[in-house]
Structure formats: structure tokens, C-alpha cells
Image 1: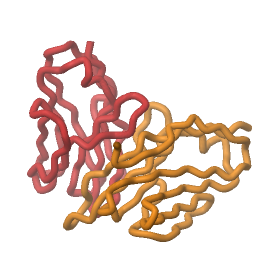
Image 2: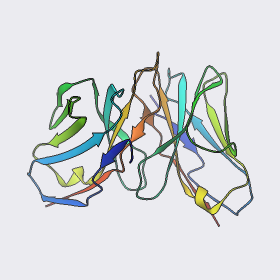
Image 3: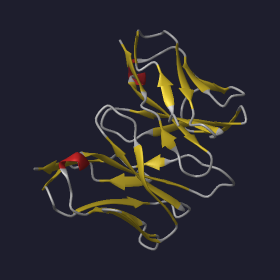
Length: 110
Length: 114
């Protein structure tokens, strides 16, 4: 059984550009959450998707948006990139309370 | 003040030692408590998951939750060099069904020396 997968692994963008990150949940999981992890910090909750709707949102600006597809996979979009958006972006999938994380996408904004 | 406080370390101990990792929190609504292990440049791996107060043991790992003190702990017995990683505590409130947002501590960097 494949775990949570994310693509791409690494990404380098310049300020002002837009980026899309992708996540496939564990088989049978219907909920996807996205987190941002800055270097040396714990992950910060961005938002959560369930049944193709955003169910909860953390303290992130509207530049961060997402989508969930009928097969439960998800995308995270970030517009107008800032240097401060450089981080590891983690996707977690769940069926109940336990959340399982993917390997992350490391985004560098120059 | 952060909702979840965790000493970032680093913490360095000899192989075979008992390791104690701790977090404190301020939100009394938290009901679900987790410990994740994160190796360098990897995603967090779920180690332990507990609901409300009490102890839970899994092999060399023991998780304790003291809701009256708003304090959680993870103990690692017979520590091994492969346990060297960053340990993250995380917690969430019981809002309806399904998983809710996790609030993480900063993580404690642990090194086990052979």
C-alpha cells in the first residue's frame, strides 16, 4: 500500500511567480491537509479538504489556495510568491483523527 | 505565547539511555495528542497517538498525557543511534468527526551517540 505521495520533490521559483504542488493520499483516506514547515520550526496548518470542499483554514493569506479532486488527491496553489514562502510543504492524509504525512515538497523562492 | 511549547534542544545522549521529551500547551480543549519523528529532509512519521489523559506504550516508546498540567511526554527506552531525529509533538481539539488541524511544537532535535 503506497503511502502519501507528493510532487515535485524540489522546486525553485522567483518572487512573484505562481506554484502548484500535488498530493495523493493513502489508499482509503478521504481528507487531505496541507502544512508549511519553515526551517527549524514545526509544521503550520494551511488548510484541510474533505469531499472537495475546504473544511478548515489556518492563518494564511488568500494567496494560498487549494483544490481536492473526486479521487481525493489535492493541489496547493501559491500566487505572487514571496521570499518568505520558502519552506517544506507537507501534505497529510487521514480517515479519522490520525494524520499521515508525505515526504514534502521543498520550495525555494529566489 | 505559542499554543504548544517544546524545547528545541539539541539533546544529545549516549546509546542505551532513557530519553524524555516534553511539551506543554495552553489550550485546554486539546484532546488528541501525537508524537511524530522527522528525519532530516523527510516528512514527519507518526509514532504515538493518544486520546485524553493517560499512558500508552508501544515497544521502546511510552507516551504520557497529563491534561491537568497541560503536559505531555514521550519516553524512549534503550535508545539507539537510529532514533536520532527531530521529535515533534502535535495536538488537536475534538471538533466533530474526522481529523482536525494539528498544532505542532517546534520540535526537539535528538542525537543518540554510539
